[in-house]
Image (cartoon, rainbow, N blue to C red; front, side, top):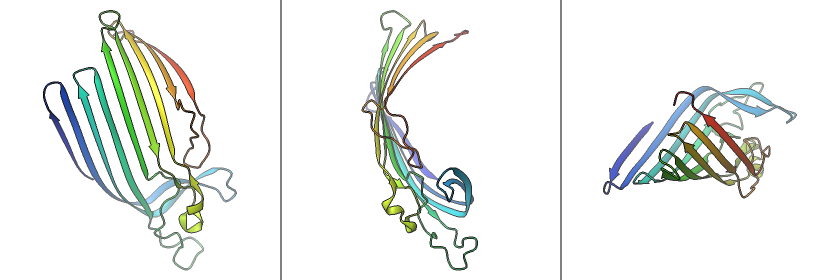
Length: 207
Protein backbone atom coordinates (compact mmCIF):
# COMPACT_ATOMS: atom_id res chain seq x y z
CA UNK A 1 0.00 0.00 0.00
CA UNK A 2 1.15 3.54 -0.73
CA UNK A 3 -0.82 6.29 0.92
CA UNK A 4 -0.78 9.88 2.00
CA UNK A 5 -2.77 11.86 4.53
CA UNK A 6 -2.96 15.63 4.97
CA UNK A 7 -4.51 17.61 7.82
CA UNK A 8 -4.95 21.36 7.60
CA UNK A 9 -7.11 24.19 8.90
CA UNK A 10 -8.19 27.43 7.28
CA UNK A 11 -8.63 28.84 10.76
CA UNK A 12 -9.59 27.51 14.18
CA UNK A 13 -13.16 26.88 13.00
CA UNK A 14 -12.65 25.12 9.66
CA UNK A 15 -10.57 21.92 9.66
CA UNK A 16 -9.93 19.39 6.90
CA UNK A 17 -8.47 15.89 6.57
CA UNK A 18 -7.84 14.38 3.13
CA UNK A 19 -6.18 11.10 2.20
CA UNK A 20 -5.56 8.75 -0.68
CA UNK A 21 -4.13 5.24 -1.10
CA UNK A 22 -2.88 3.08 -3.94
CA UNK A 23 -3.20 -0.67 -3.39
CA UNK A 24 -1.46 -3.66 -4.91
CA UNK A 25 -1.76 -7.16 -3.50
CA UNK A 26 -1.03 -10.67 -4.70
CA UNK A 27 -2.65 -13.34 -2.58
CA UNK A 28 -1.85 -17.02 -2.97
CA UNK A 29 -4.46 -19.54 -1.75
CA UNK A 30 -7.08 -16.80 -1.85
CA UNK A 31 -10.13 -18.01 0.11
CA UNK A 32 -13.55 -16.88 -1.05
CA UNK A 33 -17.17 -18.02 -0.98
CA UNK A 34 -19.05 -19.26 -4.03
CA UNK A 35 -22.31 -21.00 -4.82
CA UNK A 36 -22.25 -24.77 -5.23
CA UNK A 37 -23.09 -26.43 -8.56
CA UNK A 38 -26.78 -26.57 -7.67
CA UNK A 39 -26.77 -22.87 -6.76
CA UNK A 40 -28.37 -23.84 -3.43
CA UNK A 41 -25.76 -22.97 -0.79
CA UNK A 42 -22.46 -21.22 -0.20
CA UNK A 43 -19.24 -23.20 -0.07
CA UNK A 44 -15.70 -22.10 0.72
CA UNK A 45 -13.18 -22.36 -2.11
CA UNK A 46 -9.80 -20.93 -2.96
CA UNK A 47 -7.82 -19.63 -5.93
CA UNK A 48 -4.12 -20.34 -6.31
CA UNK A 49 -3.58 -16.64 -6.88
CA UNK A 50 -5.56 -13.41 -6.99
CA UNK A 51 -4.05 -10.08 -7.98
CA UNK A 52 -5.59 -6.85 -6.71
CA UNK A 53 -5.12 -3.32 -8.00
CA UNK A 54 -7.02 -0.49 -6.41
CA UNK A 55 -7.24 3.02 -5.05
CA UNK A 56 -9.27 4.85 -2.47
CA UNK A 57 -9.69 8.41 -1.31
CA UNK A 58 -11.38 10.03 1.63
CA UNK A 59 -12.03 13.53 2.91
CA UNK A 60 -13.48 15.02 6.09
CA UNK A 61 -14.46 18.54 7.11
CA UNK A 62 -15.41 19.85 10.53
CA UNK A 63 -16.75 23.21 11.61
CA UNK A 64 -16.07 24.14 15.21
CA UNK A 65 -17.29 21.27 17.40
CA UNK A 66 -20.80 20.85 16.03
CA UNK A 67 -20.59 19.88 12.34
CA UNK A 68 -18.70 17.14 10.51
CA UNK A 69 -18.95 16.04 6.88
CA UNK A 70 -17.04 13.21 5.27
CA UNK A 71 -16.90 10.61 2.57
CA UNK A 72 -14.80 7.94 0.89
CA UNK A 73 -14.63 6.23 -2.49
CA UNK A 74 -12.95 2.93 -3.39
CA UNK A 75 -12.12 1.09 -6.60
CA UNK A 76 -10.55 -2.38 -6.51
CA UNK A 77 -9.96 -4.82 -9.33
CA UNK A 78 -9.50 -8.43 -8.21
CA UNK A 79 -8.20 -10.64 -11.03
CA UNK A 80 -8.07 -14.43 -10.97
CA UNK A 81 -4.52 -15.66 -11.61
CA UNK A 82 -5.15 -19.39 -11.35
CA UNK A 83 -4.01 -20.61 -14.75
CA UNK A 84 -5.28 -24.19 -14.56
CA UNK A 85 -8.42 -25.75 -13.12
CA UNK A 86 -8.68 -29.29 -11.69
CA UNK A 87 -9.53 -31.86 -14.37
CA UNK A 88 -8.97 -29.28 -17.10
CA UNK A 89 -5.83 -29.72 -19.23
CA UNK A 90 -5.84 -26.41 -21.10
CA UNK A 91 -5.47 -22.92 -19.71
CA UNK A 92 -8.55 -22.11 -17.68
CA UNK A 93 -11.17 -19.89 -19.34
CA UNK A 94 -11.39 -18.18 -15.94
CA UNK A 95 -7.75 -17.11 -16.09
CA UNK A 96 -7.51 -13.29 -15.78
CA UNK A 97 -11.25 -13.03 -15.10
CA UNK A 98 -12.51 -10.50 -12.60
CA UNK A 99 -13.47 -12.19 -9.34
CA UNK A 100 -17.27 -12.49 -8.99
CA UNK A 101 -19.40 -11.71 -5.94
CA UNK A 102 -17.02 -8.98 -4.77
CA UNK A 103 -17.96 -5.28 -5.13
CA UNK A 104 -15.28 -3.35 -6.98
CA UNK A 105 -16.57 0.24 -6.85
CA UNK A 106 -18.31 1.72 -3.82
CA UNK A 107 -18.58 4.96 -1.88
CA UNK A 108 -19.78 6.25 1.46
CA UNK A 109 -20.73 9.65 2.83
CA UNK A 110 -21.85 10.94 6.20
CA UNK A 111 -22.84 14.11 7.99
CA UNK A 112 -23.30 14.80 11.67
CA UNK A 113 -24.57 17.78 13.66
CA UNK A 114 -23.84 17.88 17.38
CA UNK A 115 -25.79 20.04 19.84
CA UNK A 116 -23.96 20.23 23.16
CA UNK A 117 -25.81 21.03 26.39
CA UNK A 118 -29.09 20.34 24.60
CA UNK A 119 -32.01 21.12 26.95
CA UNK A 120 -29.66 20.79 29.92
CA UNK A 121 -25.98 21.08 30.73
CA UNK A 122 -24.11 17.83 30.11
CA UNK A 123 -26.63 16.56 27.55
CA UNK A 124 -25.75 16.08 23.88
CA UNK A 125 -27.93 15.59 20.82
CA UNK A 126 -26.28 14.06 17.75
CA UNK A 127 -28.16 14.02 14.44
CA UNK A 128 -26.54 12.00 11.65
CA UNK A 129 -26.98 10.96 8.04
CA UNK A 130 -25.26 8.22 6.03
CA UNK A 131 -25.35 7.24 2.40
CA UNK A 132 -23.87 4.12 0.81
CA UNK A 133 -23.38 3.46 -2.89
CA UNK A 134 -22.33 0.10 -4.33
CA UNK A 135 -21.92 -0.18 -8.09
CA UNK A 136 -23.29 -3.26 -9.84
CA UNK A 137 -20.89 -6.21 -9.89
CA UNK A 138 -20.68 -9.68 -11.41
CA UNK A 139 -22.70 -12.47 -9.87
CA UNK A 140 -20.81 -15.17 -11.84
CA UNK A 141 -17.51 -15.37 -13.70
CA UNK A 142 -17.54 -12.86 -16.61
CA UNK A 143 -16.27 -15.46 -19.11
CA UNK A 144 -19.23 -17.68 -18.20
CA UNK A 145 -21.91 -15.11 -18.88
CA UNK A 146 -21.38 -12.99 -15.78
CA UNK A 147 -21.73 -9.80 -17.82
CA UNK A 148 -25.46 -10.47 -18.09
CA UNK A 149 -25.92 -11.59 -14.48
CA UNK A 150 -25.02 -8.86 -12.04
CA UNK A 151 -25.91 -7.73 -8.55
CA UNK A 152 -27.69 -4.39 -9.20
CA UNK A 153 -26.25 -1.10 -8.04
CA UNK A 154 -27.42 0.02 -4.62
CA UNK A 155 -27.87 3.50 -3.16
CA UNK A 156 -29.20 3.76 0.40
CA UNK A 157 -29.83 6.52 2.93
CA UNK A 158 -29.81 6.18 6.71
CA UNK A 159 -30.65 8.67 9.47
CA UNK A 160 -29.88 8.47 13.16
CA UNK A 161 -30.48 10.53 16.29
CA UNK A 162 -28.65 9.90 19.57
CA UNK A 163 -29.49 11.78 22.75
CA UNK A 164 -26.94 11.46 25.57
CA UNK A 165 -27.84 12.54 29.10
CA UNK A 166 -25.68 13.22 32.16
CA UNK A 167 -22.39 13.33 30.26
CA UNK A 168 -23.29 10.22 28.23
CA UNK A 169 -24.27 8.00 31.15
CA UNK A 170 -27.71 7.47 29.58
CA UNK A 171 -28.11 7.17 25.82
CA UNK A 172 -31.18 6.87 23.62
CA UNK A 173 -30.68 6.18 19.93
CA UNK A 174 -33.16 6.19 17.04
CA UNK A 175 -32.11 4.91 13.63
CA UNK A 176 -33.89 4.69 10.29
CA UNK A 177 -32.07 2.54 7.72
CA UNK A 178 -32.76 2.55 3.98
CA UNK A 179 -35.44 5.19 4.41
CA UNK A 180 -36.30 5.21 0.69
CA UNK A 181 -36.88 1.43 0.83
CA UNK A 182 -34.51 0.68 -2.04
CA UNK A 183 -33.91 -2.92 -3.04
CA UNK A 184 -30.60 -4.01 -1.54
CA UNK A 185 -28.73 -7.28 -1.99
CA UNK A 186 -25.85 -9.22 -0.53
CA UNK A 187 -22.86 -10.39 -2.60
CA UNK A 188 -24.85 -13.30 -4.04
CA UNK A 189 -27.90 -11.25 -5.10
CA UNK A 190 -30.02 -12.40 -2.16
CA UNK A 191 -32.36 -9.52 -1.35
CA UNK A 192 -31.90 -8.05 2.11
CA UNK A 193 -34.60 -6.41 4.28
CA UNK A 194 -35.76 -2.98 3.18
CA UNK A 195 -36.68 0.02 5.30
CA UNK A 196 -36.16 -0.58 9.01
CA UNK A 197 -36.32 1.37 12.27
CA UNK A 198 -34.35 0.73 15.46
CA UNK A 199 -34.33 1.99 19.03
CA UNK A 200 -31.15 1.58 21.10
CA UNK A 201 -30.88 2.14 24.85
CA UNK A 202 -27.49 2.24 26.54
CA UNK A 203 -26.43 2.86 30.12
CA UNK A 204 -22.89 3.19 31.50
CA UNK A 205 -22.54 1.98 35.08
CA UNK A 206 -19.18 3.63 35.73
CA UNK A 207 -19.49 6.70 33.50
